[in-house]
Image 1 (cartoon, rainbow, N blue to C red):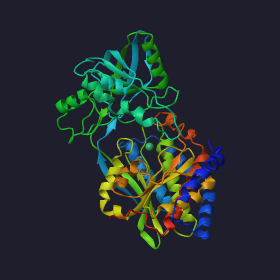
Image 2: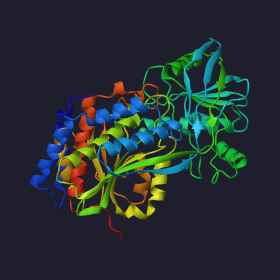
Image 3: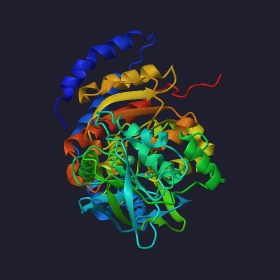
Image 4: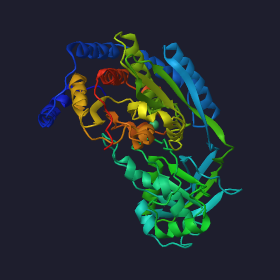
Length: 495
Ligand SMILES: [Zn+2]
């Protein structure tokens, strides 16, 4: 994983320089600040701290689904871990949430070639009827094909299957389009009278590891077919106040099992499937965000928020998603505190709860801390696995953009190129803060194999490369330290 990085930086070096020429104002950190950032990065590259945090979380807590008892164990672990690493003001900020729990699942092809299929319930899936489902499969190549199909009860009693293979890419760009079927497939199927939804896993691996993830609840602007929209209005008239939940099982088949279904379909054979599904919604549960700080000095009132999410899906141990992020941002902040020359701004680590099940911790954080959002001058999250950082983007005021160009120059030796200077996103849990005007940056990771592991039982510690993890910590430590020292206001001033 950690190969060819200097070459990458070299290849893109010219483009970066050409971009900087257009700047009227150039910003430079002092020699002392640059030397301090470089020393921090070197220390991080030799440090096992992030690995030790990640090993502890994935071993001693393991899976930690949002709202589950295991997620509460993770919060207690996080408090102990942050205190042991010398953080100040360590606290849990609790919130209530709807809680969905996985039950046993059995999926079996009964005709024409009987065999078991490896499958997993999607988050928010309903249980099936008593005695299970025994039905014919209606095969669709894509979500779009299902949306184009006739409404009414055109698929009455059938099980809908949507194929639609995800494309692997360094930036993970294939994920969004492949996810449409996971998000609203249930509603399009249910609107046509189907008894269950099966989809090809939204993932890029070729193992028998089905990929879970949450289904979506529609709002007024969701891109639904007219048939689904009419059905929604009729069957869930108050869906804007009470989120519409699936009434049918929504299930992902592993890649190789989806291949099997696709092959049999191409043979022109009609398929039947048997499904016993037992997942569903439980009583309201508690989750929480865990917070700790490295206090600043003369600019202590200004907060740089760096985050990751503490919850994971329930089938792996959440090593790449997002134990790695927890370890990276925590280790970076701790190393900054240990290095002397205390940061001028306060560095706040937020380990968000219940991200996977709908960014619930992120929205709770923004709601509960609304009065303080003006003091958060910069925010970012590490939530794209443990691959090395290859690109640095920022979304800050015009005045502050040269500061981030300067940070970019200081992390080039880690193999990182300067990317978007008008970035809007700082990571999933930063969305509500960014919407409220908080400036953001992003240390983008190589994600080519991220979706081989993400949301599957295969998301485990052995998949993490310690050297790539350490490179992440080095990039975060240098970036956050430099951002904490610059005088410039990162916020865009209101006119
Ligand atoms: Zn994640």
